[in-house]
Amino acid sequence: MRVSATLPDSELPRQWYNLAADIPHALFPPLAPDGSVLRPEQLSALFPETLIEQEASSQRWIDIPEEVLEILARWRPTPLVRARNLERLLNTPARIYYKNESVSPAGSHKPNTAVPQAYYNKLAGTKRLTTETGAGQWGSALSFASAQFGLECQVFMVRSSYDKKPYRKVMMQTWGASCVPSPSPRTRAGRKILEAQPDSPGSLGIAISEAVEAALEDSSGKTHYALGSVLNHVMLHQTIIGLEAKRQLALFGERAPDTIVACVGGGSNFAGLSFPFIKEKIDGADIDIVPVEPASCPSITRGLYAYDFGDTAGMTPLLPMYTLGHTFMPSPNHAGGLRYHGMAPLVSAAAKQGLLRPQSISQVECFSAAVQFARSEGIIVAPETSHAVAQVIREAVRAREEKREKVILFGLSGHGLLDLQGYAEYFAGDIANMSLSEDELNASLASLPKVGPAL
Ligand SMILES: Cc1ncc(COP(=O)(O)O)c(C=O)c1O
Image (cartoon, rainbow, N blue to C red; front, side, top):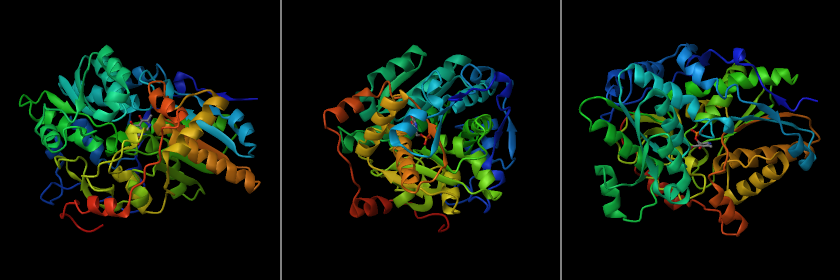
């Protein structure tokens, strides 16, 4: 009986899928801070031309360069595994499959976009990349990819994760990158936060401000910024996950999943797995597509769909997205990669257009689900991924109660082997559910910029 479906190198998808070509209602454009429509060249201080073209593209299929495929082929196609032992544990008639992105060198899906981003930068003559990282997965992925193309890399890592996950920094150093805790005294944005709150735990929004500032201050133009989620080109690069998963489900004899689940921080692993299936849903397939976020950082389930900055200091363009407000300070939940105030414009548009069923879950349930998963399937997942696992368990239990056979596909976005501090605190009973009151939410939504049309 088949448990795992691996595909040969020859089956590696050779094109990415762009949901912008098929989403039913046109996307709202990004705006410049004065409210005018952003011109692509306004991004050229941050990104190379090819990535800017991909950002604005509505072409359905975009070729993956050979040089990128050659690197991705070291660990791709990633396995699609049937979680038989979890099914037995839950006594569910559901058939549960997970796409295991933890097998990449950095341990998550993030290298799927880090490699093409480093590649296009190298082609454009970039010498150095700056970026932010939450849990450290993206920072290590970009460090790895930069090493492949001989680029320098500087990573601003959210302070609370930096303190809890010291070995992520060592990984980045091993790949030749430097890693600084954020907020840092190196940038104006960091200094401003530190003056107001010297012990600030940091946030992804603050770290993005620092990394953008560090890229812009190099007047030679040889330093660019790279973002690990949120933007359209990042979603595009991740679609290799779902394209492979489709072929692998067929190897199991499955036609299509009934339910797709993935965790969402900025939206990229969710987009990667689900966008090729959203295309089928737009074409009439009946698929329940579920992004899962932390209850303490609930951008799609409780945020507003509005224009907002991607970072705390307001240095990025304004993006049309579900947001909690760019000044939102998420509580130090263990899933550092999900502590982001906004959501990718493409994922936000899909939610707004009724194609998704967003959910939020508190962290105690997530850790409990991750432990069940580790004891049944063996993989110790990242705290981010535990949100997907918790939702899958809810769906599988419901299938049992309804006596309904169904196919659940979920994204195993990364392993948690460098996140064991969170597991240790869970076993010690020191993990609490963090809530977000209406007052806190309203205070942060009040920071939304007053430009652009109401959405
Ligand atoms: C393992 C893992 N999963 C998920 C995420 C969330 O990011 P995204 O929503 O872009 O997939 C992160 C972000 O750091 C991550 O490290």
